[in-house]
Each structure stands twice: as C-alpha cells, then as structure tokens.
Length: 180
Image 1 (cartoon, rainbow, N blue to C red):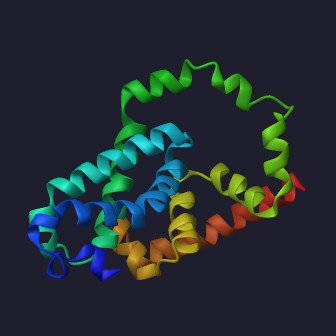
Image 2: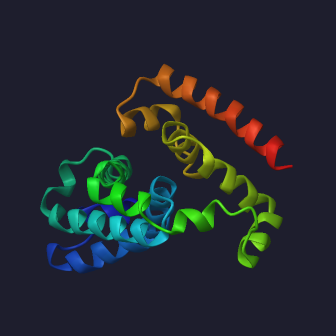
C-alpha cells in the first residue's frame, strides 16, 4: 500500500505509474463511497474523477500528506457534499421524473434480484439512512476505518461518531425489520 502512495519508491518521472496505482487501489472504494452520498453511480464516478485530478495535481506535495487514505477520503466526501449543496443538483433531482420510478411500489426486475441478496438488501437499507448516519456506517463497516480515523476524516469529535454509530444502528435495525 505504501508502495503505491509514496514517491520514495518510484522516480519522479514515473508520476503516471504512481497515478495508475492510486486509481487501481482506491477507484472502486471511492466510487462506492461517493455513491453512498449521491445515490447515482454516474455522479459518483464523476466525483471520483475529480478526486483523481486533485491527486494528480498534488503529486509534488504528496509527501507532506500525513495520511493519504484519510486525505483522499476527505476530498471525496467534500466533493460529494459540495455537489449535494449545489443548486443545480437540487433542481435536477427535484424536477426529475426519476423520483416517480424510485417511489413506485413495484420493483423493476433487476431490483428484485438485488433485494433477494442479503448483502444487497442491507446496502439498500444503509442508503435509506440520513447522510450523517450513512457516512459513519460506510466508513466504519465497509471501509473498516477506526473511530479515530473517521473522526480525522470527518473532522468530528470521537464521541459524536460513537453517538451517530449508535443511532445509525437503531435506525438500520428499524429499516431492516420494516423490509422483512
């Protein structure tokens, strides 16, 4: 892991090799993280592209970053939150006909298959959580980060993280019971 991140192990002229390593190591994880915020795979991919552009631009300063993983997650989360706050995003989502499809009582065939899988079923319930609970659940259980790392990434007190985790578990339990 440190091989991919550190410039010490590669020559400066191998910036592209370093960049490809970052993309292969973090691409899927960051896209899933962004998807947890946007609930739109295409938007999540766009956000991750922006994150990788930021990484590429910061190559010369990469040795100054204490925790690369926390840094890249923080950038992804910030870009997601910026998008969710943007007026364009709000107009597109609220005026979209997609809401009528997602609120339909009948699931499309591909969603029936997803619903049958226990893991996908749980993921769907996690996506139903409010963002402040969804992000701590995602970072703790899916990314396997510690409370301390989550606190550093989100810039939130450790006790607040623990409280959100507890509340998220309660809400998740209710959602799981309601679906069954």
